[in-house]
Length: 614
Image (cartoon, rainbow, N blue to C red; front, side, top):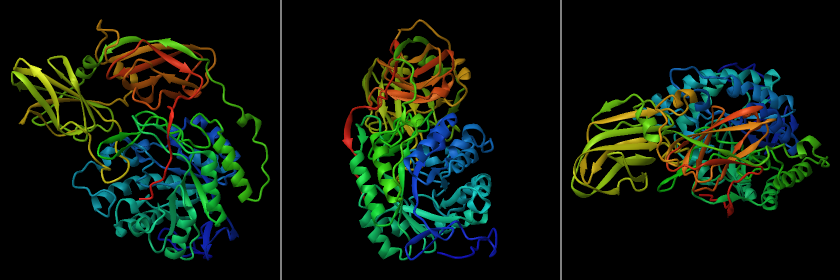
């Protein structure tokens, strides 16, 4: 594809050629031979006051392009509100900052993004119709996506290179060959972009083998690769399968993410840089995924499913060249050397202000005091009645908690409480007495209890640990999707209370009231941090079990004693001179204080990244 003009439904045959074209396996930018050396950086994972700093660090890495996904649920979490493109959601500002720094920009609007992000970027409300066939040409699905694209693409269109902007490429869907084979859907996605004014080059992205190309590519659209090793082998596949197309590894996995309860993943700088060099040596283009990972703030971390839920941790550091807090790692310098060599440039010193570590708050402890108990908090919300339990989706809840309660007839002696269709984690009480926890892995097996028999108050608090972002379980609902049984008998007539933890913190804290229960019982905890000057810090909760943390009313993320992550990154812009408020909602067992650390605590290195090519 190396035309002088480019025809699209939106602009007609007189539209200018896209900035990027190709011919004979060579890539051109405005007719000049070109190689993309890019890094993925997601605006939704970085505090907006730090966007410029992270972009400056990306430039220092030696790349010429920034790559970002667009997360629909970050812009439109609620159906009754229009998509938001202001403040932290100001995608145009982020793209413009990259352009002003001299970078081209690749935009990946999905709508599916994977990205270890909650629900693969979809708001739950948009795909909760059980009749909808997800990621397909089903009109129920494409109509919903078109409504989103009608808001999103007018933000991207004026930032294209044809208008003097930095956007030089836009992706169709995302790794579709790992999910489906509906080529009509891929053609619809391509057409939806064109009809809304996207005239820069379009591309698909899939794994580096024939299997993934079979499902995810189109004959008239540039195909790119997602992989972390064996680049020359994939290049040979492209030579055979995609003649004339330049090889572009649009996701080079130079690190990896972590799940709760697993070891921390790393990949050596030397090995990752050597593999990147192999791709560049065969003339390929490359994008580091991630160049800077950032943070899954709030409840936006996603999950995988491999026989059971695998929720992703709050940090998205991903062992990237630019660490979660912006530090330049050994991998940064190794990749920089490879990139400068590939561009025929002599390495220059990293600017001094980027080479210096950012200031941090000195280590200290912060006393935490008990507030409202967990059950008092969850019982205070308005109840909805039903015969069988209602899912999060039927209650109109995306993320957070649902408190279920019913009167159950229990047999005298031993009984088993079973939950069919549990997603994800359930805390169970009988007559105000804590009975235990069930998960999606053992909910149907059940929890054995011993009672005196008769009518009992059964309460179940279900936590959504993150919606699945990859694989055939993508789109799965949350809550109790079937029912609750005592032995083999269903319990009917339920009340459920939806608890939206994304609501403003003062509203949440107004629910329930503090009492004099034990000092380490589950519930709210409060503390005050007095500082002279804001700076980054790393917040740990020794003695706490599992819960969520707010700083100055901002929902920072989840913490869980199973690790590997021990401390949450707190960006300096979230803090202020004087008194800062720390609030914890603890689901299992509390402690007495928080700790501020001067270094990240992502867990002991127990896993070396190894790629599964599928």
